[in-house]
Length: 375
Image (tube, rainbow, N blue to C red):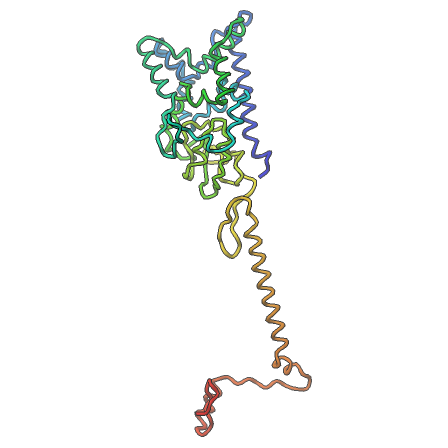
């Protein structure tokens, strides 16, 4: 599969991110800047489930905030695609240069660690900070303190545009930008974002759904995977579950944003794929794992894709050499030379049945034995 084709989905995602970021800035400007005066609100906030929950509880306009509930439903079936394709704050942070991205050159550096510094193994429970953070914000909201408006990502991005237009300083936005440069482009999204925690919880609720029921799903073929770790190193979220998972089929990872970077980085054809209702949108790989002819044994790794063909050629060459040798031996035998002399006819061969019949008819004749001895 050509590199350009494998990179089609990631480049499409970046184009979609840039378009939604531009639309978000335009909507925020139209809703806040006095000369515009065409919009009373940023329509992107109607897609935010946290902002919708706060507004609906205060005004009882649950149907007015239908786009937010639709997003939650799509997240149940697909995962956190909103974070990887649409979220303006996450898109901006991902565009920033990151020191952590340069340091993460091995899979061991990406593995999460506990408070003592030991890596958290596969299958162990890991509680990210964003989940208790979301719980605290919801408890404060129920007690009458609305802190969700301070840490909601869409509200932060909207406030940053408004402050920039008014000549103010968006301190929270600047702090998140510095955090992205130092700790990673998606550190906020993975560890602290309350909206990300809400969407991850919704994604977990639909983790048992098959890939054919999902509008967008990451699918893995464990038999083709060589566990090189390139998928996790290419992931902007630093997810190691893609490389470590031994599951075959849809990978319903709570924090996966379905960006397609892991599929583009995977070197084995068909090991990873991005699918929509079961139909492949993007498939991984430049080389495929083949089977050797005559043995049926799969080759080890993508770099040995031609070994089976080479072994098959060697077997055919060996059989041809054996046939030539047998032909040469038959031509050199005395029987073959005698049969080919001109003027002489080859004696007809006598089979064992005729010999035995003669033996029974003539009792005084020596019997034919396999050892050639006398009776």
